[in-house]
Length: 609
Image (cartoon, rainbow, N blue to C red; front, side):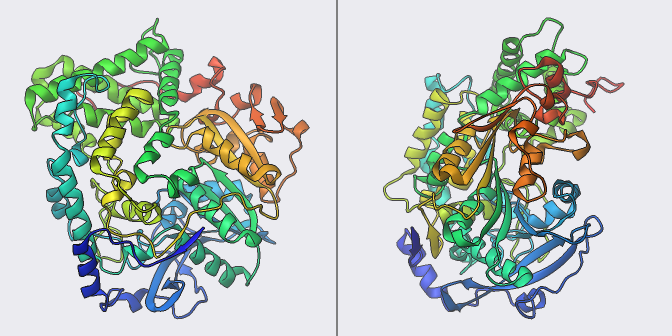
C-alpha cells in the first residue's frame, strides 16, 4: 500500500518546530554548486578511488508528488562496462540502509562486481538521500565532539553490562534503571535532528530512493526500459520496493541477504531485532566449530583437543571476565562486556576475518590474565579499537561538508533517518516495550548478542523518532515481475536469516528462484573475494544467469539438488573449491579454509600488535 500523507510528527513541540521552519530553504546555500545542470548525467573522473570510475550529480525533486518542495542532488558513480557491446546498466545498493554506493564502487568491491558481470554491464550506484555526498544530508551534530558529548554515558551508546543473559536480577535492575533517562535522551535527539536539518528527514526513505533510481535509469537507458538491480542486505528492501512499486519495469533482479519487508514496514520497528537475529547464534556456533576444526595453528584460541562447545564457552567466559573488569574499574574501564559482545557481533558478518578475530580474543584474554598491565599506555592504544564496536555507524555527518568526514562515531544518523522513515506509525509503543523486547530476545533467541538490542538504534527507537517519510510503501509484497528474480540466503546469516529469503521467494511463487547456501555471514555474493576461486557452476553462475550471461541448468550444478520449494541447495565437493567463506560447513577439509593465516598472537614484547 502506498502512503502519501503529511509528515507524522508525534510530539506537539515537533509539530510547532516544523511549522515555523516550513518556509526555510530545504537545501543548503551551496546546493547549486553541486547540483546537476539538468536531468542528463554528465560524467567526469571521480576525484578519489580506483581508476576507471566516473562520477556525476543528478537532480531529483525532494517530494516526487509535490514539485514545490525543492530539489535534491544525488551523488552518482558509474563503472563503465569493460567489454563491448555492453548488455545494459546494473544498479546496485550495498545495504545499510546508510551504505554509500560511491564508496562501494570506488574501491575493490567495484572490481569484484565487474568480474561478477564479466565486464558486460555498466555498474551504477549512488549515495541515497541523506547519505554521504548526496545533498541534503541527514545530520544532527556539527562536530564529532558535539556528538560524543550528546551520547556520553548513555546506555544507548555503551550498551548494558550483563553477566550471562539477563538472568541476574541485579543486571536487570541496572538495565531498567536507565529507562527514563534513555527515553528523554531519545526525545532530545529527535528535537535536535529536526532543528539541525529542517525539511530533510521527511524526504528520505526507500520509496523516494526507488523513484530516484527509476529516474536515473530513464536518463541513462531511456524511458520505460527494464531495470537490472542487485540488492544486498537493506538493498533487498530497495529491490522489493522496485519490484512491487514498478513491477512492469523489473528486469534482472538479484536479492542477496534478504531483509523481511513485513518486519521492515508493517511491524513495530523495534521488533526487527527478533527477526534479524534469528540465526546469529548459528553463526557464532559456526565460528566455534570452524575454530576447533582449524586448530591452534590457525585459530589462536583453539587447543589441540578443542571442541565447538569448549571454544564457545571460552568466549562466554571472556565476556564474563570483561563484565567483572568493568564492575571493578568502573566507567574508566577500557573494555566491558557490551563492547566485547559488539566486537564479536561485527565479526560474524565476515567469516573470512575470523582468524583475525581469534587473535584479538587471544590478546584480550592475555591482558586479563595480566591485569596489572591492563591500563598501561601500550594496552590503551590497542584497546582503542573497541571504542566504536557495535556502533550504529562509522561516519560523522555534518550538514556543512559536501565531502564525508570519516570518523568513527557512535550513531549513524542516516541509518536511523531512513530506517524510521520507512517504519510504521509508532502507535502506543514505548521505550519500556523496547527494553522488554531486548530482554526477551536475550532469553529466547540470542543469549550472546541479545543485550546489544538496546544499541540497535536505527530501528529500536523509531517510536521516538519525530518524522516519517512523506511517501511510504507498505505492501503488497508479492506482485509478480515479468521475469523470475533470484533470491539468495546463507544458512547461518547473523542479520538477514535464510528464513527471510525463503519467505520472499515463496511469496513470488514461480516468479522467483531461491538459492540456499550452506555458509556463514551476510550475503553470498559479496563474500567472494576473488572470482578466480569460483568453480564454473554454483550460486555465482546461477546469479550470472539472472543477468543473461550464462545458462545454468540443474545438471550444470554438481553437488546440487533442486526441489520445487527450495530451489538450488548447494552442497558437496564443488563448494570446497569456492572462496573460503563459501565452504560447506559440513566438510572439515573445506571449512578450515576459513582460518587460512597462521596465528600471530604477540609481538616481541609480549603485547598485542
